Length: 318
Image 1 (cartoon, rainbow, N blue to C red):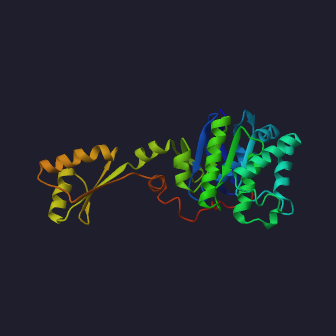
Image 2 (spheres, rainbow, N blue to C red):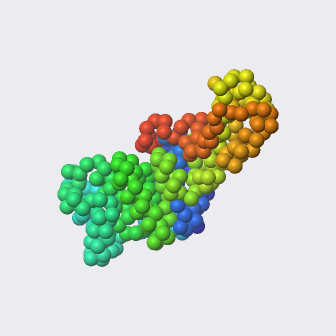
Image 3 (cartoon, one colour):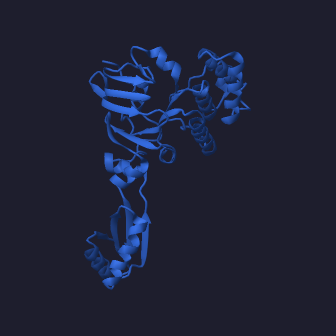
């Protein structure tokens, strides 16, 4: 296992930000940690990256204890947090090279790697400017490059796409997928972009109130907690009521709504059943569930509520 935690807990005075998380991530996995604002995602990442110590429980990262072997952990991971990490008075390229050197890379290798990341993340025109003159999106891309400079075996990404335009979001996703494919990098990310988690992660872990409440593939989460919705429209309220009775389903505004495990496969069977009863809908629609539907079911609120950035509070330790 690349990550293994046991009852990992973090208290800030009387606030239990992370509440006994048991988590395993295998080498080479790409895992998304998702949850509403303040759910404990960023606090969990900060403990796993040795930035803050746990109050209780334990965590092994890349085979090393996050409390007793911090240096060994840090040498093997990359961490891209929500804040900007580059020095404002430094040039972007120099910051990348210095970061590589800090990880023990030879000067030439650090320069080469910096150049590759600058090209990949669209920083060629601004890499030799001071960080203070860069836009918010450019700084974000520089932070991402700094986290990738040493090609870590385990990469933590905390809201990596925040502040990026669609093109640079797509470039970042492509780089992450390629990094994993070429080097077997284990990747753990938090994100509020549901399409990002759905398309990239083979496993989604939902956290709420500091606890893991769901852990599965995106497809299984949607099938298990929401399911496909089959919506049948009728021009006549009488026909709608009869169809609802025949199918044992609710009716509202002239539409009968059913939940099916596999909507496209079930739709023909539903239509055959109605035809045998002398009923025919005016329209039929199959809606596939989204991860936001999963969140609404599991937590009672949408992941998008409260904005795009995680507002997990900066609390004082007990």
